[in-house]
Amino acid sequence: QKEVEQDPGPLSVPEGAIVSLNCTYSNSAFQYFMWYRQYSRKGPELLMYTYSSGNKEDGRFTAQVDKSSKYISLFIRDSQPSDSATYLCAMKATDSWGKFQFGAGTQVVVTP
Amino acid sequence: GAVVSQHPSWVICKSGTSVKIECRSLDFQATTMFWYRQFPKQSLMLMATSNEGSKATYEQGVEKDKFLINHASLTLSTLTVTSAHPEDSSFYICSANGGADTQYFGPGTRLTVL
Image (tube, rainbow over all chains, first blue to last red; front, side, top):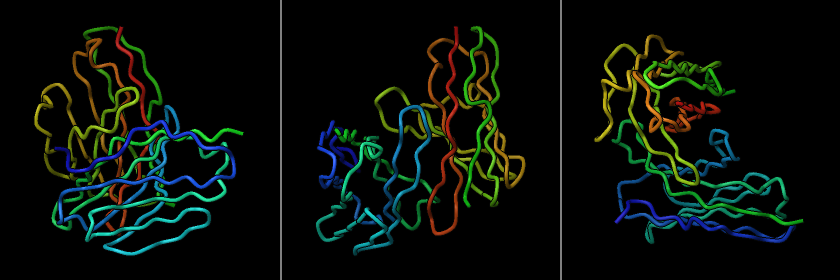
């Protein structure tokens, strides 16, 4: 079993809809949780960073962490065609010397 | 802020030659950099962790003699693919540790070995 599970999609939504992405994990030592956006043939871009549990909002993006359920989510409101990309979750334990565990990435397609 | 560059962005080489890829943190110092490999429609595969001034730590299954990593300064790490073969063709991405336990990624280097 992988430490981080993420549905690869593709997830297709109409423009303006809410995109809902999630990852589950098995390692209770994870404390740092990130979401990255990756366009085709580009490097990942950091979208959201959360430490421990809770919610974080930045513009149209909301990240949620539920450590009791080992479940993290990313919501994108008012989705735009430019949001079409692969979204990767990543997480790290405090003592893991910076090594991240990545999900497989979910491909999102926002149709006009 | 937190910009990481990679050079070259793409490279085509003949089988048997060596290729060097540079990773630079432009506006911050990075004591730790990471090198990843990514195949089409797949996630990132960590190859090695590079610490400034010390030897890189390679992940299981990654040949350290084939993928030479040097982290010469707090802003530069290099990956050299030695004696490249077609199976080494891939998208190579570096990242640098920013503050607050996160990583900032470079734009990637696409390597094609003929």
